[in-house]
Image 1 (cartoon, rainbow, N blue to C red):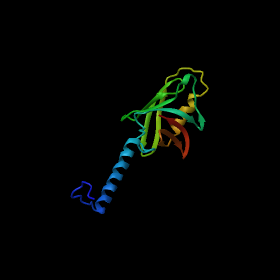
Image 2 (image 1 turned 60 degrees about the horizontal axis):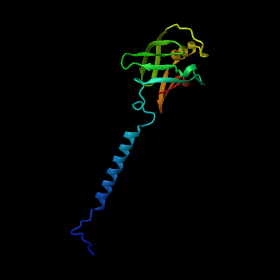
Image 3 (image 1 turned 90 degrees about the vertical axis):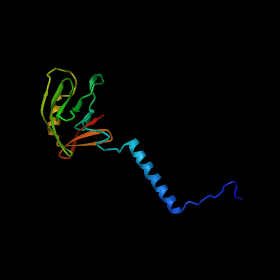
Image 4 (image 1 turned 45 degrees about the horizontal axis):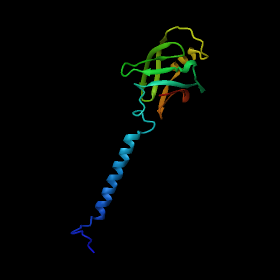
Length: 152
């Protein structure tokens, strides 16, 4: 029975395999484009993100009133800014590859009653030597040890 099909040409198997391969590659790129690559700096940029402190020296950080200690990197000026426990601060950063250092940290001088000493936070910043970003988390390290973790 030709069942109503006239002059049906069989597509060579070699062409079908190429089409299948192209479709598979297109689906893979489409998936990566929509989901992002976990851990890539493009997906989670250092600059232009307000980073909120989660842990400091291995201890979870929670402030009164649902506030966060924040860290912001300016786009091209090499400046940082943020809010510590009670005070706003600013300074400079130098980045090369995954090396990172902070200097010239200055802040306002408002007294506060939260349990965390701001000097511990500022001391951590000036001891940073490298960083990594993975799955929306910024880890600051000193001599290979994670000393602070921020979230987006």
